[in-house]
Image (cartoon, rainbow, N blue to C red; front, side, top):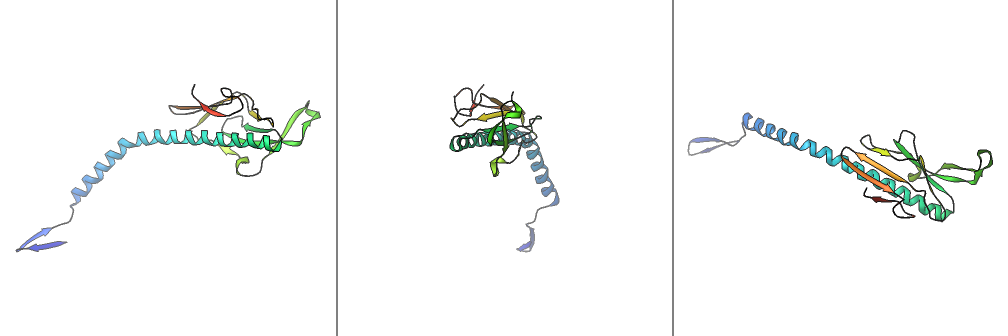
Length: 166
């Protein structure tokens, strides 16, 4: 837009050099902020994964008490996923030396929960059982993402899964 004031022309537009300078400055700022964003995002994923595990665990414990059936949190061998299972009605299978047989749980919490690629899960057992009397198998789950770590345990506080500091 060109204005004419007293016989002289005044240009109110940006030049190409000014626009390029702003783009370069924004690029530098974004390049400096990207590492902090990725660390923050990995921490967010770690917290979300821990919260999801706690939610499923607490729901399993409540359902075990309410339905008077054993529920279990079952982890895959590669530790990349987990799912919630419950004991079959005829809980003890005589053919398997009294082992409890588990079946799938319907609904959103019974689905297969995949871990984000940036999260590493470490625990000793593939199965954590929740019993009708409110007790839980002793378990310690370590979740790590880059330089962040969270521990979920049923050992420190009896009868409850919670986050703990190591």
